[in-house]
Image 1 (cartoon, helix red, strand yellow):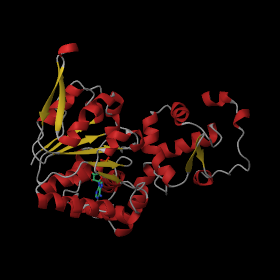
Image 2 (cartoon, rainbow, N blue to C red; image 1 turned 30 degrees about the vertical axis):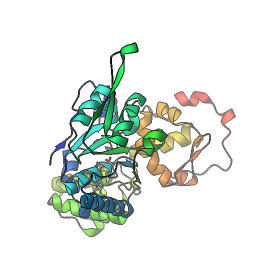
Image 3 (spheres, protein in one colour; image 1 turned 90 degrees about the vertical axis):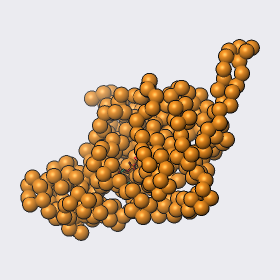
Image 4 (tube, protein in one colour; image 1 turned 120 degrees about the vertical axis):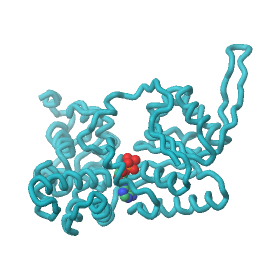
Length: 362
Ligand code: ADP
């Protein structure tokens, strides 16, 4: 069964910044990433609780001959939201259409996806938190009763026509579940939150993918790459690819611990897997904002990067590792952040009132 990944209807208001590669390469999967993507549920590594719940829903749907329930996946980029949607489509042998919230900026852009959906197929909507509210409301009856309500005519002569649709499944993916409206969230029957991966799971993914890429890697090198992949399979794949290139260019193509260490050092990935952008974030928070608390907008402006990059790519892992905490007044560096940068921790709370704002613009 086919996968359609293009926008059926044109006219998207997609922000061009979203199409530029970002430093962490987390939001921009490429063809190699596609090649390494698990195709069956049994190939999925980690996320055991989610995988088991999906296996139950899958078995029930197959037995009853009904579409899967609507599913919402949330979690930082690169953790497997698209992978799970692809796996379900393969396991069910149904069509998969892929689109994203920014592409569905008008009702007329959503219509083709709804009317073309085949019985039991999957419609995957990435970045579903970016659907405009008018489009959101338009798909409520789709999710509840498999129908769309179209208003024909205007004023006194306006009437609503109900168009019945085939029964299909909507899979939504979001990096910001908090931005989803309550009514939209409630219309998903399953909510699956994806967590950062354990090192052991990433080491397994790296070993499997090295074999797919016909590269040999020692166990200790695979573990080292795993430890330095920020809990994210997409980054593990990117690190593996770089180390593989490095091994080919500088040695005989085999990846061992020394090669892995040298290759990661050349990319400025430190012993904890943090990259230049992570360290810049911590340095800005500590040196410019005296460790915080400060808002994400101020941090983004000072670093000259998009605030979405900070919220989606940089902060989730730093929060998870407790280098940063969120307080009611904003982000604050913890002693772990100071330690990570090799800095002495301040003894007293920084006094923001006395803080010289001019340093922001140094
Ligand atoms: P998201 O949609 O959450 O941004 P993806 O599903 O595109 O992330 O995952 C990125 C890549 O990471 C996939 O192409 C795949 O190679 C790998 N990956 C993600 N989750 C898993 C997993 N559970 N097991 C093995 N590989 C995975």
